Every structure is written in structure tokens, then in C-alpha cells.
Image (cartoon, rainbow, N blue to C red):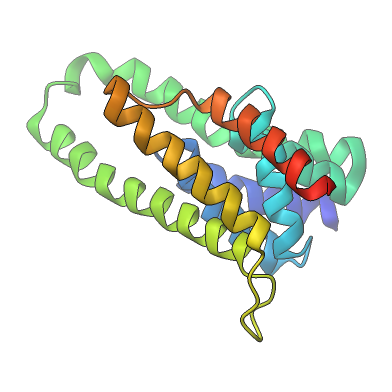
Length: 187
């Protein structure tokens, strides 16, 4: 039964995932929480691990979640299920793309979808910051260490943009935040 649930959930995610990989995190989160596969806190940890491992985050999440629920076969089925719709769409698009790439209606649809994806990514980022800073949702309790790390990372990012006029490399943010986490939470 779990195999079919994984296949169906990740097929749906793969079918409706459009744009950047971070835009799919809310879809995966909803599937994971609705099936009670893990808690929100555990899902947040999975996202953090998937961001720091090589490969597309959607594939990494599918693999880790499938593995946590049904071992090797769950990981394999979830990964194939999340990738299959995109693979099929890419095959179809590649075969007809030559005729429609400059079509103004197709371009309008793509330009209209971009703000939605940006909104989904922003909402997930805000959600992750709030869920990591607040220890509980029933009563307000702050994790001051998480607030400190978040504040330092935001300050570094904005200062780097102002000084160098470009974004701080994400891999350096990941390494720096891991180091700060080790130092702050170890003591």
C-alpha cells in the first residue's frame, strides 16, 4: 500500500511542479504532512539535508522520503515517480518546440507563471525561517540561536550584494551556516 501512496503522491508532485525546484517544496510538504509520513520538523531537516547534497532538491527529497517510508524500493519508486512526468513533458516539448518557441501566447503563459513560482519560493522561505525560529506554535517561544544564525546570514547576504553587487554564492552560505550551527548549538 505504501508503494502506491508514494507513486501517486510523487507522480502528482512531478506533474504539477513547474519552475524552480524550491517552488516544489510546498507541494512535497503538503503530501508528506497529509500522509503523516513525518512531522513538520523532520521535513524541515530533510529539506536542509537535500539542499546540501548534490543534485536537484526535488529528486533528493523524493529519494529520502521514499527511503524513510519504504526503504530502497520506496526511494526508487518515489524518485522515478517524481521524475517521470517531467521526462515525458520534455520529450513532447522538445519534439514540438521548434514550431512554438516564438509564439506570443506561449511566451505570455511562461511570463505569467514566473511570479507564481517566485511567490511560492518566498512563502516557503518565510515559512522555514518562522518554523525554525519559533520553537512551538501553541505558545510563542523563540529559538534565539536560530534567530542569531538567520540574522547573520541575512546581514552577510545583503552586505555582500551591496559591496560586490552580486549574490553571495549559495554553497558558501550553506557551509557558513553549517559552521555557525555547529559552533552555536554545540555550546
